[in-house]
Image (spheres, one colour):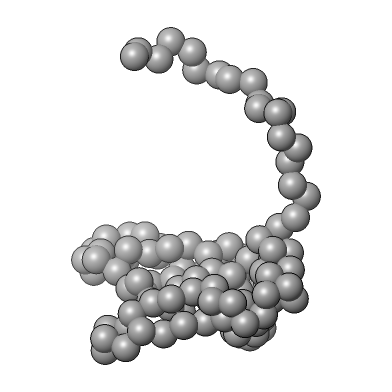
Length: 117
């Protein structure tokens, strides 16, 4: 099917939620603190689990650390492989108001230099 329309009106069949991702994490940690929120296998082959309460604790700690390095609205580059800590830092950035810029760890030095400049 060929697209011939470049604009669609908003779907209003469902109301928009007024909650943020931070609100959702706080809610899940309060209502389901011991449920598994994240599962990741580390490079060492060990599977790690974080409950919602642990995820919230780590995200709040990450937010505090990020706020020592930058101000809300600043951009912070994250140069890392796919690890359990990635979403923790991402949630921390959201809670702190810092904009996380994902950097592909496969970039070569000239590409990385260009991106960071």
